Image (tube, rainbow, N blue to C red; front, side, top):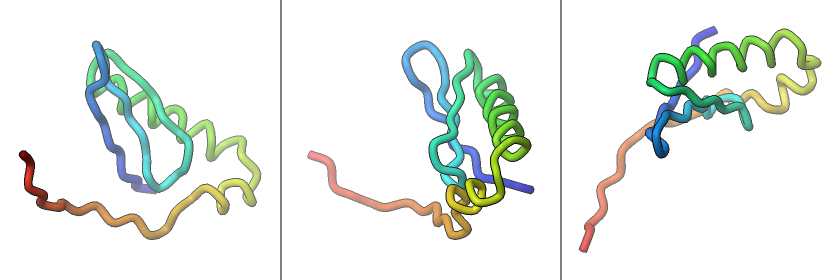
Length: 72
């Protein structure tokens, strides 16, 4: 299954999360490590979570877009 991964810099590392699966995040010292850790967390979730939990947390419609706003 292909999922969206969003990775943001936070302090001295990176945080990765998947907007399609609520409440699963990971951290890493590099972008690659944060992404790999997120992949691990997601795999674990799908391996152990009951089907009802997966259906409850899995979002099938995620829209990634940009918005323009005036600053200052």
